[in-house]
Length: 259
Length: 331
Image (cartoon, each protein chain N blue to C red):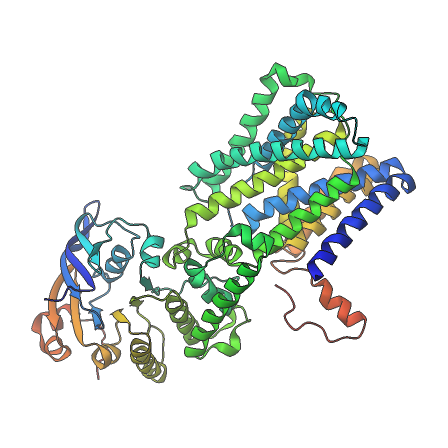
């Protein structure tokens, strides 16, 4: 049996007395587009934080491409092929759009600090390659014309796209998207759905998606896992999840955007 | 070819000014000029830590002191006798070589101090980091006060005046070039990313630990070199030159110029070195007016004179002389 790309095994994340994530088992196979849904406070972003190394799981382990990664520092995990976007946009506010994306290419640099100070030909070539990679990402996300503008001058929807461009520039194999449709109008979420499918195919990505917008979730996810109070209460195909009574109960009283 | 010309031209200008300036300016003006040069090195080096990387370091005078005393002791114990034995070299060259070695020694030891301060401070943010750096600065000063071998409270006299215009402004140019080259490289972007959002920077693969320590070490190195230049200019060192107040003076330059702007730091270093001198005529009101001006400037323009932008001198040049300005503009 083929090994999963990402393996979350018996993972518990406990903060003092609070179990934000409780005994989670989740495997993601290469190339999948998996959705992670649940009411607010269910522990979804905590799962992302555990995967990306912001937290070390209290119990359990996480493997990526067969190697254990729980407890590794976030920058090592990012260099290892997992990048993410954030629920509340975390752009580098004083940098241009291009520079924001360039930061993500930093792990792929070849020239060291000495070369940068001495401005060796190797350095110039390296810088050119990094900038070119960043520009390509901007073009894919339709932001090339804003390359030299401050990131904060972009409209909200464009800033969300910039974060995705940034996450892509690191050449990840697993992309974690945290509520990419938050705050987008119906047309923008439509475009987002097409965008996600497009980049998945183009860059051969595996994607794990946290999302509240049910149209997006049901529209593009191949498989959905549902969290509630830190526990996984359901996992399966979109049609199964939609009809699952436990899932419906968890969302009772919450406003859903299902169509 | 272009770079060789720029380097050659700069060196030539420095050599010529080095010969001409002491003869045409009066000693007071020359002294102020030298202090401007030293303050430029201090301000730009602090900008690497506070401006580029967003680390709240308020103990810069400590690194300056380490560099000053180290280089002075090097010259007094090793350098001067060495220069005396080099009969085959003309005096300015021998002295310059000794100064170079002394500055490197001072800078390296200050860099080590920067590393020692940088490492534990990595786990601290904002105010807590500031307290640690403040504490370090004070520890250095008090240590010096209590070491008899380097003069303690009496100070360290008799340091040969090897600092010339060439060395002071040569260092200033060097620090500016180094800072600019870092800023416009992927390493600079990593520092800026840490400043703007450390969590996001780490999530994108930036080794924030390594870069924060790097900023501290580099900033400390140049502060140490500035200290060495200071020691070989003033000819006498006293721990009272390296108090917390001195750290604050350098911070004022970085903040006034705009955190993250190299040309801002240079401009502010010039302005804030000149200002107290220009205000000497107002005698008692001097520090009052100085302080008031700082307050007014910070209220009306809190981002500093240049914010995070750089002075685009080539753009102005082209505008003045008719050619199309470079559209890239501010960095």
